[in-house]
Image (cartoon, rainbow, N blue to C red; front, side, top):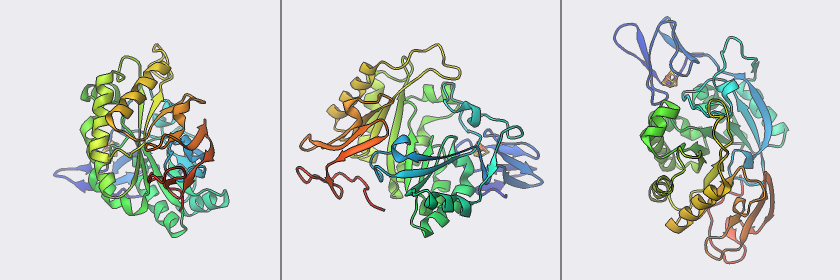
Amino acid sequence: MEARQYTHTDGDTLQCGLCNHRCRILHGKTGICGVRRSIHGQLTAETYGRVSAEAIDPIEKKPLYHFLPGTLSYSLGSVGCNFSCTHCQNWHISHADLKFAHLQMISPEEGVKRAISQGCSSISWTYNEPTLWYEYTQDMGKIAHENQVKTIYVTNGYMTETALTDLAPYLDAWRVDIKAFTEEFYHSVCRAHLQPVLDTTLRAKELGLHIEVVNLLIPGLNDSPDETKKLVDWVIEDLGPETPVHFTRFHPDFHMQELMPTPVRTLERAYQIAKERGLKYPYLGNVSGHQYEHTWCPHCDNLLIGRSGYAVGPVHLNGDKCAHCGESTGIVTHL
Ligand code: SF4
């Protein structure tokens, strides 16, 4: 499949414009992601339709708490990543060699059919970075929308603004990881940059996508109160105070096995900072049973949506409004 979002440059290189690495690629080579290859003057998307993981997930698992709560999301992933995070929890697929990976073919039409037959309200592209599946997700997104199925990216946010603008008519939700709020972390841990993630996420907001932010707190690397304040202030000012932010607990993985899991008190501190600065819907993640998994009304403090792990209920909403005080929440409850 020919890739989209690339240009020919002088000489025999192609320039990919899909993500902010903007790789220049010589004939026979791939970009940093390892799945977009230059072949005889054409960039190819090598993972089109090739699926490494398929599941029916609660939408809360993405996590998305303000988008069709309590529904199922047909979830698909492939292989490849444009980041090199040393703590990656899906490294077996994100850094798999395409030659050896066990992949099944699922066409865009078949994917939508399976989503509908399994009672899913949405399709999530997740597990590895969906940006690298751009052509496939765009094609499937068109068919999904024709069938009233919503679409979700669970992403590191490194897509270029131009690519996102072309994808946006077929995309409903942008669940983005803001992995830290320092350039140093992005450079040393992810081999990427912070600012493009912020710019593209702001573009997602302008394009009308539903946005939720995940900030995985890793002890000693990105969990200082000052950094949390900066992240929260950016969300409030650029995305709006109603934007859900999930502070999630780190568990040692991949090349970060020597670190401890995030202390719950660190997550609670982040929650308090967020509330004090005016964020309406902070959450804690990977701490099943904690009261800050629930949605509380920012106006009257009553329970709006109870959660335990991925289970939802009770729900005290009339449409998107608090059933107690009538506060509008912006929670998307209907297709
Ligand atoms: S998607 Fe990103 S990493 Fe992959 S080839 Fe394009 S610019 Fe490079």
